[in-house]
Every structure is written in structure tokens, then in C-alpha cells.
Image (cartoon, rainbow, N blue to C red; front, side, top):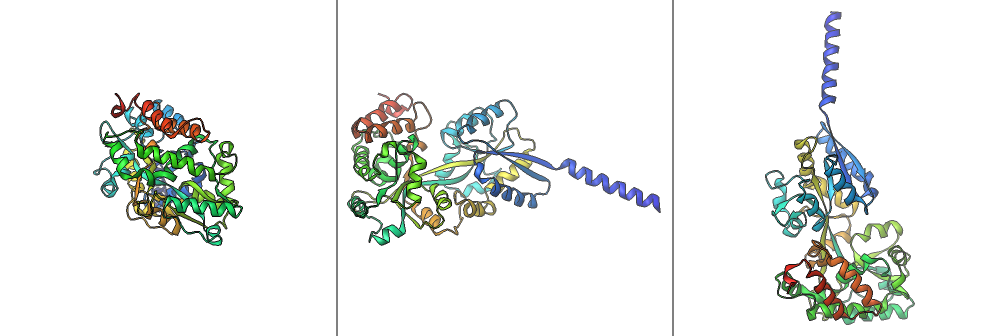
Length: 412
């Protein structure tokens, strides 16, 4: 009897040991260090449904992430799973063969994703998807609802109404906009946030069809209006950096901030009592379609040679599901790319609603595939424009001439 019990104990011990041996640990890399606690909760939920798979979170500095990731993958030491950049940012990894190609057989849920979402993580040359799109970001105007209410201001329907709102705030001793342009990439965001409605869908369609370029009068008009509205930025705004501009808004010294929906969660952290609303900056006339700028900023990809391909694909499918996307949206204040996700936050729900009328954040979405990038050119151009060193036409020409170095439709 003792031998029987002893044998059973040994068998049980062996079984437990085998289970531990066959458990797979996947590594996940990202640049989102601040989201570690939430991601570990997501991974715990995934492991509950897949007890044989665990995921280890590792984050890197956002500015060095691309280099760290590509270097590790090139050396065969990269992660099994990773958060990927989009558009031109994913092509260098996919083109080198570092990422697992995906399709609707491997990930059936992608059939329901929007075309713009899928395009953000698709290699242009082979038309293959290499990551599950994660979240969209929206370029718009964020405003302090209490300041607007106290000063009798409604969301503007035309450019003249926007100017009138700025004048009302200025007369009340409140900075209309908190924005500064000392941080280069902010020069790019304000173009999309403030002038998408002025550019219009027709301009964007003609641009993509190769029928026009950035010398187009519609684009020049947009830059002209950007120059006009900049007089309502803080005094000395050309020397005002990003963090300082954020603080002006969250300390309620300014009524509006032109930027991305990614600002919302951070603004709440800085000032939990802050009451905010969002709107699409208007076109010239009230009847003009009001548009936001839209892009997808990240995706979830897998190593082309993961430790365990089946396990990696289980996570990729999880990332494409509402089971993951719903808490991802609500706990991290993201507008998820997964179809059918709803929002606890009324503000995020409004952002999602505004996204139904949009054009691409074009310098990022369409013109980051060569050098010089559209982002580099517009950031430099807007800096000169707002410093009085260039005209709107000069900026349009510099954009067109610069991109002609690699963008075929602009080559003469």
C-alpha cells in the first residue's frame, strides 16, 4: 500500500513537472512604459484563458524603441510579440522579414477591421498585413467646457466663429490656445488639428490620385489660416515647448489646445477636475464639412520566428478580439481599431463619432516612406511660417520639392 501511494505521488510530481516544462513564456516589447500595470492585467486575463502561455512585459524608451527592436530582431534575439509602429515605421521590419505575415485565416477577426486601419500595418509592396491594428488617434481641438460656458462660447461652426471665440477669450484675459511650436513635431500636429476642414476631402483625394501637390491653392489657404490663428497662441509661443503648452491648458490658463486625442488621458492625470470637450476645427463656412485628421499609431505583431508560433498566434487573435479591445479602450483611454468597441468615457465616444468624418493625418500616413519625410518638411516649414521667415506658398513649394526626391507623383 505504501509503495502504491509512493508511486502515485511520484507520478503526480512528474505530471506537474511536465506541465511546468511545457508552459510557454512569450516576451512582449513596447515603448509604452507608462502602461505596464494595465498590460500585465491584460496578460493575466489571457493566461487565465490559456494556462499554458504566459507573457512577460518589457518596455523601452519611445525614442530609442525602433532602433532597439530592429537591432534585437536582426540578431535573432528579439521578442516573440511586440507593439509595432505603423505606415513607414512598420515597413523596415516587415521588409527585412522580421515579422510574421498575417491574414484572415490566421486571424479571422481582421475581416471586420476598416480599410484605413488595416492599411496602417500593411506592407505596400506585397500588400500583406504584419500586425493587428491597435488604436487610432485623432487630430482635433480640445477645449475647456467650463471656460467656454462662463464666456458664452459654443463650439464654432465656421472659421469666423472660431476667430470670434478667440477674441472673446482674449478679452476675458484667457489665452485662446495653449499651443507652442518650440517642440518640432507639434508644428505638424497643429496643421492637421486646425486645418483639415479647410483642406477638405476633395484636396486629399486629388493629392492621393496624383492630380495635385502641396502647391494647391486649397493647401495654401489652409496654411494661410494657420498663420492667422497663430496670433491667438500664447505670447512668445515660438519658444514654448510641448510640456509647457500642456501645462497652460491643464492649469486652465488657456481655453483650447489643438492636438491629438492622445492628450486626453494625460490631461486628466495632470488635472482630474478639468472638464473637457472636443470638436473638429471648422472650415471657412458653416456649411463646410467638419473634418478631423485621423491616423493609426500602433499595432500588435509577432516575430517571424517566435518561440512558439501557435502560442504567438493565440495572443495575436486575442489582440484582435473585443475581449481585449474593450478594456484596452476603457482602461487606457484608446479609440480601439477593433470594430464594435464602446466607450465608458463620453469624451472618447465623441472622438469616435468625429472619426466618421475625417481625412488622413497625411504627412504621417502617406509621406513617411522616404527621405526627406513629409513630417520633417512640414515641421520645418511651419516653424519658418510662424516665425515670419516663409509664406504659405513657400511652405507648399518646399513640401512638394522635397517629397519629389522619392515620391513619384511629384517628380517632374
